[in-house]
Amino acid sequence: MSSFMKVFLLLAVMVCMSEAQLGHQSDQCLCQRVRDRIASKTDIKDIQIYPATTYCNKVEIVVTNNSGLRYCLNPKLKAVQKIMASIMKPKTSTTARPTETTSTPGSTNTARI
Image 1 (cartoon, rainbow, N blue to C red):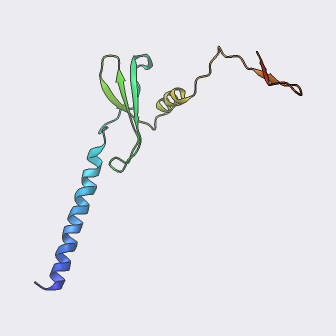
Image 2 (image 1 turned 90 degrees about the vertical axis):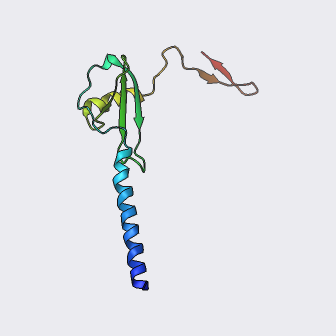
Image 3 (image 1 turned 45 degrees about the vertical axis):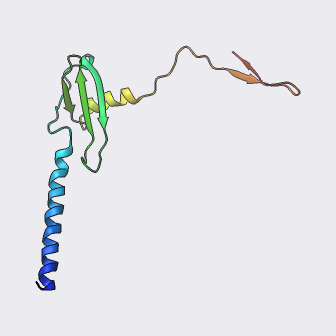
């Protein structure tokens, strides 16, 4: 077999392998279909966010409702973005009071409530 045929055969195998990997990449996403609306915010039991990876190039939001049904939401929707922002917002405690630290020369720091 000539060296030209060997190189051609090697290139053909490499092209086939890369095509197979690219076609297989989209199958790794959890969400094949997404919902364009949220049924009820009070019916949501759990939300899982899966970031984009090398296997799935999109962010996926999987919601579990109180009856155990799982479905995917479209992360580009305004309503979904609002819910995600409210979940991600840090909660502030209303029971803690600010403290004020005072010190005088020759004494230790004292916290006053």
